[in-house]
Image (cartoon, rainbow, N blue to C red; front, side, top):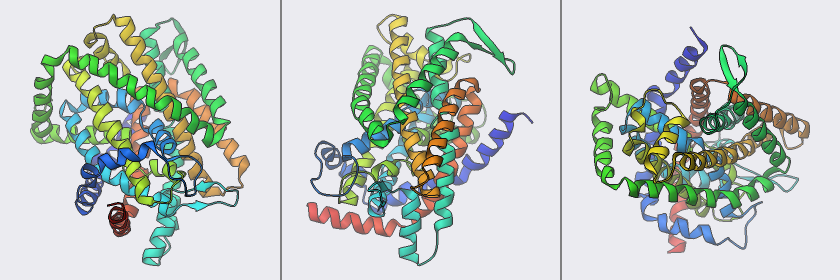
Length: 468
């Protein structure tokens, strides 16, 4: 068996069935028990983005915590991941992506709430919180049993996800792929039968250098960079997508009909109806989770650092991230790929699919369209690299303790090396590795959320009754 086939077997074992059901079931249970909070409290959630609490422990503002989380979630998943899902699972994959995101908003709310409720202030004054603490502390308080082994498992998978998957390899690989479309160049060297251009080598080296410069500053520098970059990059990308959709307005209704039809019949793909339906569900949900990270347990690590005294308040702020990331940004990308027919181009994969859609759908020259998308992809991926470094380091800090300065610096070194190596792996291998570690992270986190759902419901009722 080849390396890629081995990875695919492992990935299928994780994602085919149990994990998809677990993620959807967790979101559905929370949605029901919270009385569709993600719909009825969304306006209130967005209002909390624009003013901070005067009291409450924390390192950064609620808005900065959200931007840090969005910097990690809004990345290649929104551009490359959506295109990959539609190419492999058909237009119906976009429906399942949005459906899973709606349920995932309730999950993300619970994650943010629990992260703030069970966070800890370390002796050095820094805040540490996330699934590892609500698994260890929350479950121990409620069930009087030691669940630290489960917390350790989550932290180990979190370190691996950042170092080998979603945090490094996929991001820089997508950047260099996009750059090669815009700036084609001659082959610089060959490795394992593959040719790597000067564009790949130079762009990969520049991204690696920029990442290294920012990581030296730690959380506050990452949060500062995210606070300035994230709002502008999201608004800019959404504006261009709107221009494209307005330009191709007559194709939107047929595209929506195709999405709904293929979501339940798999009719846009070859093969049996049940098989193609499962492919659409799997690819849509997997890529959606990759993009918004609801259920993975990553975003609550950033939420725990927010200056707030109300766990439910930060939970509401957290769930806006899933809404922005998937229901808005991913949907726009998906419609662009479907209305332009880019998903039907068999010779294209990854970033090249979305680049084709932008080149064909925008009323600008191909060069301008490709430049804009490549810049968007680069910024999205760059901020994701920074955000996931923070997540991974917090997982490492939980495993080794806050005094392990040498371990932290060593991890940053290997993280930067992984960024440097990302361009030289195949697209298929990179995305499969990311899916594997994403799935492994989700298992311990989902178990904890299900077992702690009573705490989430209680805190929510108290918060809403007080606010109302």
